[in-house]
Image (cartoon, rainbow, N blue to C red):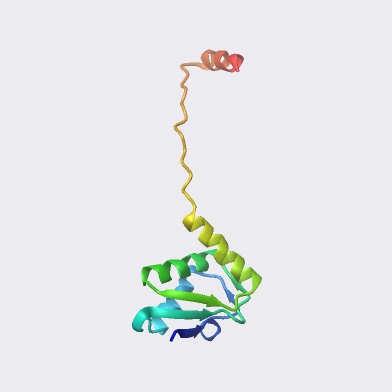
Length: 114
């Protein structure tokens, strides 16, 4: 059986800080057998991107099997946005050539060629 954590019992309707995750860390026992937890986000109207990121990182670091329920469209969208950035490949940048000039005349000559 999963443990249900009602987020509204720990936070106001607007959760806007990365540090807010420390409330869960300090007040909830996550050592339960199997670590299957349902987080109920009813009555939470907004979470910041930083909180969503920290929340997902926290659940992964602690190997929690979670379900997130009763999220409004804003909360769902924020979790989705963070998950997309966590799973997307990092952009790879190519080397950019650097051209140096000894004087203004060389620079002007270069500009004349493009």
